[in-house]
Length: 306
Image (cartoon, rainbow, N blue to C red; front, side, top):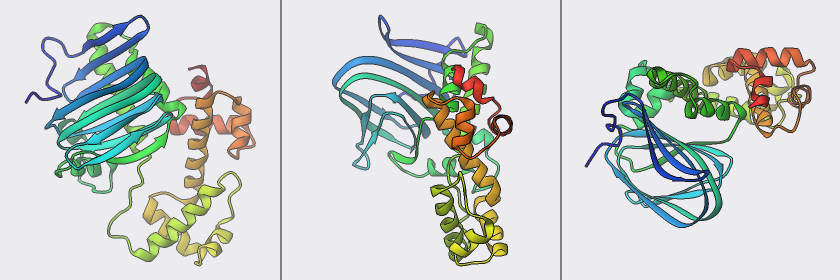
């Protein structure tokens, strides 16, 4: 059986048109050894099935901009549905999959395949790091397992556009696209909720209770004192265990939630920057833009232009 990732011959960047009809296309791009993506934009799909068999260990990220599809794992006898406006991360060490599109007016999907040997370059011997966690996962004997699902955000679309349409000459396409893929991986993997297995149950309980409260109201969150009371603990312990479990302070976590929400609102392109800033809890647009740039490396106005 041929490997999915060893398809580059005389070039380090290989683009293959699998289907082309006017504005419709299915394109496979081998960026470099260990990184492959599919750019799929087709219309009026009815009852299509695609079989996918392989023995490569990989992480797969599905970005479903339009339409939806079902994945049948014929190894574990499981089914997953990837829906419109969602980004799913899957882990797989042996593939016997059937991808099914029942009936869709339009399907617009970006799929990124990352080989385990590519991930291995960035391991740092910390089991609580997302890449180490995902790498260990695909060393197990699993068919296909969904690790995370999140809504599509503006920054992800911005980076994907850079991956699909690299603005560089042919000799630099591979390294430019690989750089953009790493940027995309960093952004998506940071959204994985990693918790050290050695942390005590009561500490996890307190921190998760605090997190649940903040998730419900991060635009005008309770004070630390009130939050501690709601979690049946004191301020000092809440601060300590929250930092221990989530590797960040309560204040920084609130900021993270606000900026993630802003990222989603930017994708919708309905509100302007000032309105988005107020919507997520910031009184001053300039302060919001500064924090957004410090976190994501791009200003909100640049995502609205996309």
